[in-house]
Length: 139
Image (cartoon, rainbow, N blue to C red; front, top):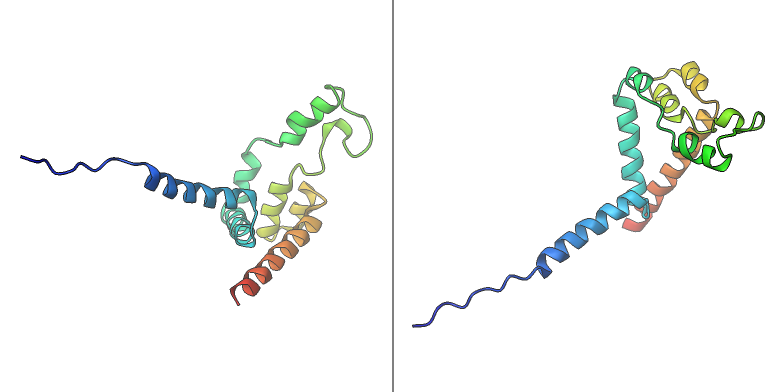
């Protein structure tokens, strides 16, 4: 009496599927392709436009630069003048400011961070350039 041959379990099929999924995830997290840039920027812009600005006003300050990096660089003795005076970084408040800008509160956006308009223009240029790259790649 012979038994049917047992299939040996191999994880190569699983590894290939998992590897491809991991590779796609890494592509989107690293912004390594134009598609990743367009998808990630779109998701961020949509989230900032949908979430009410009051949410960001009540959220804690999570600026890694201000909370961790500057105190390490200056050994907890923040400079009293210059761009990093009192350990404030130029990027603090950009999330709040972009949210205000997307909700058409131009004055509120400027009050949170004076660089918001420059950053918005740079983001728009990067976004459009990557859309153009995607369109050219499809031809």
